[in-house]
Image 1: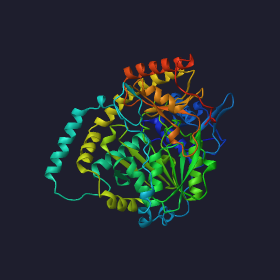
Image 2 (image 1 turned 60 degrees about the vertical axis):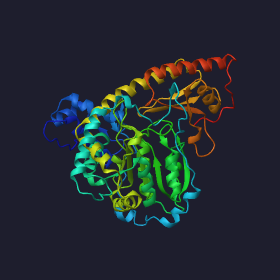
Image 3 (image 1 turned 90 degrees about the horizontal axis):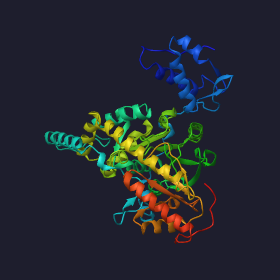
Image 4 (image 1 turned 90 degrees about the vertical axis):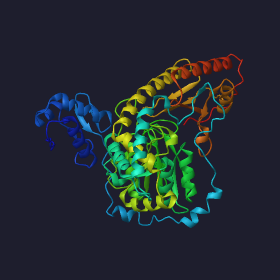
Length: 499
């Protein structure tokens, strides 16, 4: 067969060929099971080196778009046809999504305060709290200069209320960043700046959910997201996750919204596979549901090339992408963003204005300068190396000295990993025994909606040094070895079903 591929110029040839092959697979021009030309023939057709086509095929195979059969050739993977846009416009899809604010407000008194992580009561020698970052590697000198610039800019500007969507410079910086790092096709007008990812979830809940609507969430999953949706009057339904991500076959047909963490499932850590992503988009198209993609720490990818976002596969305008700077800079910055289907933007801006009018412009201006001047990209590269070392240390301990007690779920991305308990040790008893030795451990049981599954621990490595990890895990091994020899106090219980 002869492929129609257009190459413009001579730069990034592999990227151009990859994009066009990927798009051909997703929109159905390259059907599932179809045999592709050999890398040698394709290179000859396009007049490029065979090394270029080999690179493209290897990448498409690693991401699941193609598969090779020894001695037979390379074929398009079945079932990857891109979710097609519905005949209705995006505005029509969401025409009935107006929030009933008077009904929502009455639910706040009944909504529990559910945080994903407990507050630290006292400093510990080694604390594996998740969701925190390492400020010791943050370039505060550059940040200070950016803030001074923002102060001068604010001193010169007129005192006034600003755009609810955020400062244009920051929205531009965010749109460029996600276009480059997460393959999102968006403009600066598509990015809405929020007070962290939590406010983005809250705004989406206000705009999309009506009291009584069904919202599907991952189980186990992120409790604050459940809280935001429940506060809007939604009926929350937990959907189990497996090694491929959320089990799409168990999603209720009448779900109005689905919340997922596809890059790094919270709290277990596995990424959603390409096939499962496509299945989720197909389901959302059929049911007219909104999919909320929370990409809370997908910037930190350690194994292989980062998989592009779920929203980059969405052609029907059904995915709202939520991002945050809490995991890349620090949580108290309180800056996040949402890039939603364009049919929701007007309503989201009204909801943002009604909520707090706009996010702090001083912080926005400083962050915009920080990103546009290249400081943010350099910081990500530095901190990525540090987190990679810590992740490797954790995995090494869990797979060797701690292997008799733990089964780690090795993550490809993020700043935490989870490890399931092998021997039926009681999760809470182990946490209490470790705290007595000044080690902060955190269980995954509280992240389940119903009955907890197999017990385990979540190890955050963003805010703990390499020396603390070494010392803390060695002490944890001594604790568990003592228990195994009859000297410990960690209780046992019957093994729960495996997740």
